[in-house]
Figure 1: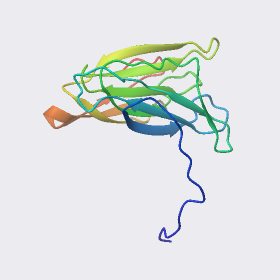
Figure 2: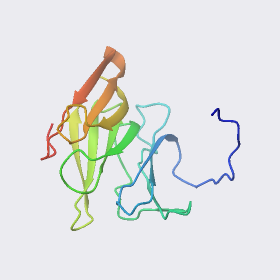
Figure 3: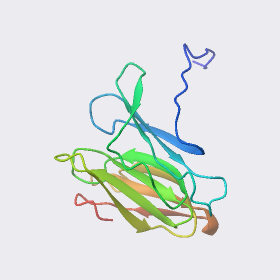
Figure 4: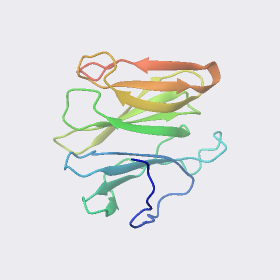
Length: 163
């Protein structure tokens, strides 16, 4: 079947300035998709407006900004992915950070709902990012395109969350 329809409705959600990339995933495992966006200026050397808002979905097309989520993120975030890269039940949110040459893993403690961040060096100017189990160990791994070296870097994570 070839797509030939049009959207039944369109909704606009206000967010931070300089929206750059968006993805979806069920971040809180309530069975409803959530939306994660990254924001940065076109000039990656300027840290103004860098953010990563999380919009929690209720399953009926409505989204509310998550108040407990760390909304600021330095390093010119370029892309974001959602997936489980450890054996904790909640998925992680991973960004590629163009200016800081790293990826940031944001993870939520399922017992306290407190988010933590950890950075891993990625190479010169990481851009695109994806999460999938690439080595068959039933744990998500992170693939990142490295813009200025024409390479792809893969972080193989283990059940402890370490690459």
